[in-house]
Image 1 (cartoon, each protein chain N blue to C red):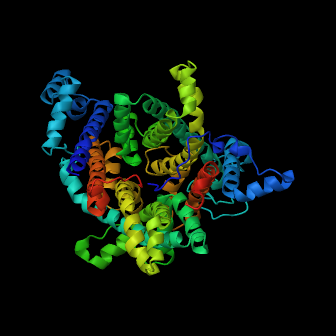
Image 2: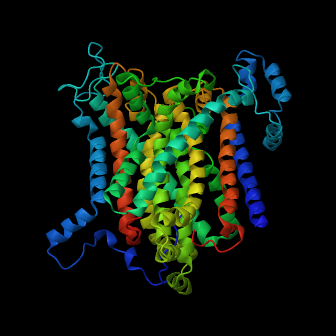
Image 3: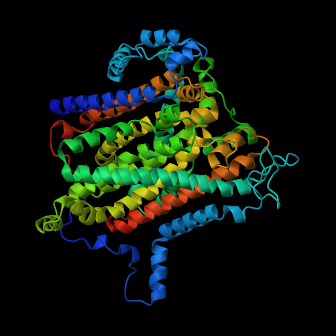
Length: 320
Length: 306
């Protein structure tokens, strides 16, 4: 058991290292010489050469990579060319918005997916199941950003129930904050909900066909108890992994949603950075989000044994 | 994620070959075919829509009522009318014609991305599964790394190197979809490698490339076809989204994401301008998802009801 945990934790290291290499390569291949950019196009070659030397840009690539990684390890992700604020500061300010959006979207996705997935699995091929599958197909195919635009039009302009965009911070009241976040969360959560529903339905179907469920029913355990205590407990374990993956996608999907709804989150920060050619910020955020994605999946995997005693005891898990 | 798999003995599997063209025998042809069509309606409907959209892209020049670039500043942001069934945009251009032309770029860019992903993915997966060892471990790690980047961020990374435009978008989508293709082809090879017909080919003196290409690859066609149609749907969604964000196609190109991005600024004056390009994306993605799901049912009857 301990060996599994350690092995899983260690297996993250090559992935993280690969991510840093990839992101570093991006910085190397960005067109234009940063020294020339900062010194100005008119600067004499000696000045540019001096700057290059000062920043170590004249060193071989692997030396520059080592320096770059050391900087990152000490929390120095660089600073914006324009505002001269550090990347960490910018991200620190924007991250709560993105986290709130991702968590709310996940909540909406779960609220839709769990009941509909379970009912579909309990009564497969029923009208509800067919309807849910069809709705899932539609949700899977709707472009999130278009759904967002249409929601803005419907609720912001036509019905005037909710603000059409912009962010109200939590400090101005929970109600106002949620009103500004509900449409973005729906636009982002719809796609995730269809994925979660499919997984949960398939998982529940598999579990409900298992022998131990038949045994429980034969013993006369109440239907609801079989469903909740026997079936759901098992079906929800693989579901947790999917949840982790979806959380990672939601963090990435916020780029699009935040742009549609004009929310000042990390996604909009990185998008504006790249459109303004503020490469340091863009690269720093890409690195942070990719690392966060890997770590979220690691945490989910490490939680696995907590949720599933069979893994904890090192028994066969081939049923998965 | 699937639980108990039905354990099928390692016998030649009749499901593998010829299923696409095999209606149930023993009835007049018309009834056999129509029963097949009804049973596989997702596949039939999806394929029909996809083919229609492809024809629309090819014929965009002849079926468009106007040139996609023809401006008319006296008739901007008009609602749908008989002359302009989808209305006009902020420069008075005909939205219907621009939607027709938009099909081209979307199909081309997403198709190219999927093609790159499936070629590279199958090549890596086949060889990794067949040779195993260090090569397998390294290729697995490397594709895992691309898995860690949400596709939007990959696109942003490529935009920073290549600048905004469709090439960055195509490469980003291809790389983001690569891991799926690698995994599916690798696991298929791991499953097939141990079967007798591969050993037989080996014993008959077949070379390694021959075994990989002529005996293993055909088994991959089914699963890869499913993955290609689902990956295509995903590619269309992201191609449009990235163009919407300003990372892909640039105005004044007639492209669905670009159109939506401009339409957003006029949402309250003319919502239909934002409506039609989005519906087009939805229809294409929906049809591709139907095809993928239909193919999956076709190739794996056991999966029925899952």
